[in-house]
Amino acid sequence: MSMPLADRFGRPLRSLRVSVTDRCNLRCQYCMPEQDYAWLPRDTLLSFEEMTALARVFTGLGVDRIRLTGGEPLLRRDLPTLVSQLAAVPGVADLALTTNGVLLARHAQALRAAGLHRITVSLDTLHRARFQALTRADDHLAVLAGIDAAARLFPSLKIDTVLIRGVNDDEIVDLIEFGRRLGAELRFIEYMDVGGATGWRHDAVVSHDEILERLTDRYGDVVPLGGRGSAPADRFVLPDGTTFGIIASTTRPFCAACDRSRLTADGVWLMCLYARAGTDLRRPLRAGATPAELAELVRTIWSLRADRGAEERLTVPRRDTLIPVAALRKDAHLEMHTRGG
Image (cartoon, rainbow, N blue to C red; front, top):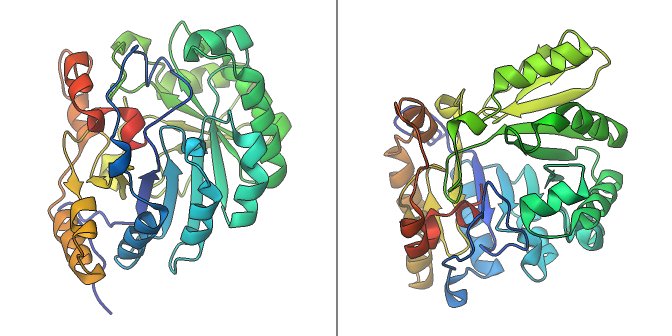
């Protein structure tokens, strides 16, 4: 038996996030707050067959979890076709999707039938007017309809909420109650200073510890659940059995256990959400590289990986926006919506 593939810190290659498009139908404050963006040329986007071919390379090296992201992945036409292709790849034990939910109600059934295992929906507020202010779109009712459809079809539904002080942090308890009614697990995400978060400020971060303090004040003892492994969220249980998670990438980075990498819609492979550059897999793929040659390239790059981006950001004394707007406008690959969050 061959040794499992590991990077310089002994982290295995287990999880791959595949962005299927850099386009999005929302303009969320923490991700796409600007008016203008650079976009990936459409002729550079990987076909479903190319994405599946690369997925086979990665699963051959130990990846067993694939998550489809964007942009907004449901903007990619015929996405259930890709889901069915990936679901048939040997070694894929967990096939998931992260979506903003706007188009989910009309696609949830087809995604389930195609073989999708799990769905995570982003929902940052329960208030329509606040949603419109956060996203510059009046699609709140569509998102709620999508969540309702997904809750009926996907028992392990998760809801992700990015908390921003003074914007939506007064809804922590309300969101927990909303998830409880649906049987969905809330995951609160600390506001991160990556990619398109051009308005990020340290004092806008609602920290892991503060979230726990507020929930303890409301519900009583909050008990941590063990067995996190390489998962991004610390999970907890309330006295009534309700579970929730906190993804504390800003104040409590989990780089030491990170086993995930990202593939952009045009085939750039990124080792870290904070990475400034990646490896172009599209060019060798389209130039006729064999699966064995692509696997050797992936194996070499991962074995050299030493990325600990979130931990390094934690040491910055005057932490501010990671990438200036001028740089973002020149390179779409630096954007959160291109690299899949």
